Length: 490
Image 1 (cartoon, helix red, strand yellow):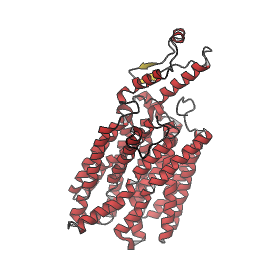
Image 2 (cartoon, rainbow, N blue to C red; image 1 turned 45 degrees about the horizontal axis):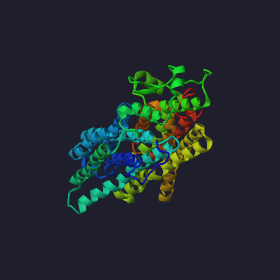
Image 3 (cartoon, rainbow, N blue to C red; image 1 turned 90 degrees about the vertical axis):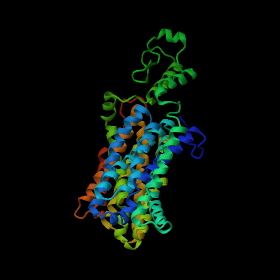
Image 4 (cartoon, one colour; image 1 turned 90 degrees about the horizontal axis):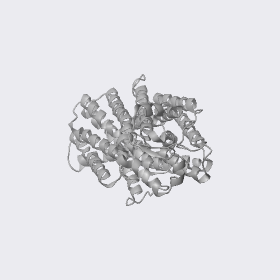
């Protein structure tokens, strides 16, 4: 795994994987959130939608992503992140291309549900990055790929209205036709990205996903990490071997038997570390063992709150601005709402970078964990301030939203700096359920907004979410960062 991130070098295999990880997620997020910028006025009027129907379509778009994220985690462990990523993009490209066929509320709901497949691209994005970068920099790598990718939710607020306006003003299309044609652009980019991913990138640093165990074994042999022939003869059964049924390097530690040298102990440590970095094929036993731990619960609660907040705010922010500042109009409110998503490119990486810096200086995962909960609780405070004040001043509203965006997006980045440490042999599954928890949070928070007295009571929605964020982080703050007896991930 790489100890540095070649951000600007696509000719390097690590740089190329990094580039396509964030770019694939970027175009997926763009298409996933392509509807909200045009729903405020154009699509809403064209399809004669009520505010409640708009809210329903937002919720269904998140529901599909929740399901796909759960499945994607298992698929990453079974087939590798690259193929899972490409499959999600190609499947999500189909409803994107069909967006122009929508003529009713029911059609919109169905199409947005299937377009929500693209929201599952986050899981292979993070798993692929984790597989190529060492734990000393994986927090930064994951936060950069996710942050730059999440910025697609902000870019879409600029691009979709811009494409729409260009089609109306320069091509002479009617508004009803223009918004439909606009979806052709993300369809082309998604399809092209998936093909480039398949043709130019490997599954893992050692090559094909199916041969990863043999590749690890071969690299360990090349580094002379196995015992000498004489030592092996004296300690049969202790040397490493491959269990082809589980596709995982298996080994028995010699520590504690009183018959090993310091050099042998170091070799055994390296073998153990290699074993615990190698992803196992999913099984019922492994799945239960990975999911039924308190550290996994911590990740689920934290990401439920932080990414749930981001998804719900992304869905309503343009409409919230339009309600408080009607002079902005659809394009203006969409442009200001775009800033929340665009800030991901800076704020989410900041959370991952800060988590890695703390880890390097403390050599303790508690440092990362304390950072995650601190960011989450301050996020809650900002949400309560926005909800209670409901600013009618643009400077106050945009200032509070920017502060909230920092703690929200940095919390997301810091959370996924901690994820690779928890059960690394089931990294895809842990990533999948954590990502799905974020989507579940978005659905729950949108339902809260949907069933308030007024489905457009955005201030009340904000302070309720803020209270949930504070309470959730406090409830799981005492839990250990990783399971007590876990060998790897430290």
